[in-house]
Image (cartoon, rainbow, N blue to C red; front, side):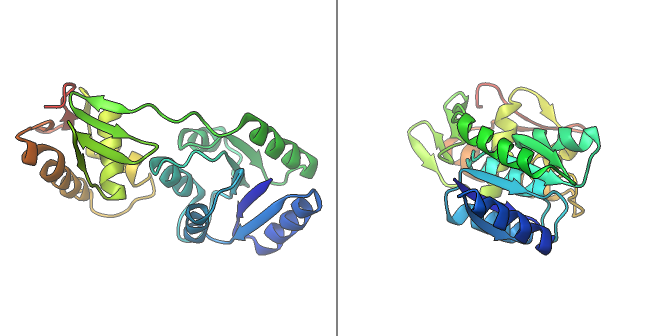
Length: 225
């Protein structure tokens, strides 16, 4: 069993690593969110264990980013946050299980084995609106037979719009789902990425699928423009 453990508590992480290795598992450790994300991108794992509160990038954001990139490796959140809404947020951002610190070591091992038996999630279905298609697992976008190249962030915004196609979504909703609730930058970043998407999936094909709904937000036409 190959495990990626991401936790900024160095002594705790080292103790968990040694314990899991004694169980015959192969463990790679990272001590901050960005390093954990890089490690997850670099190799394949059976389970990723994520702390929530970490320097640079929270466990929530790491998990959300991996899911947006089509990585469906099972994720276990291991955290001192014990509120029920914390757990809800962890599961809603793509986590598969949740264990609160302090925890029972045999329970941790049992949950890791259960996640491996359960396996990764089913590959998500292709999202479509007319001839606009996005394959979340392959991270590929098409207009008809033409493939469109998008950045990871553009892909994440389009993914959200397609999942809510035909509905008006606010800037706040887009930011929460793409950048995360802890984003403290300029909300106008959404307008920038909407402009990028229009320049790639709409205008070159004579379409106007991404609509601005004045005073409310944006809507991707259900039939793809």
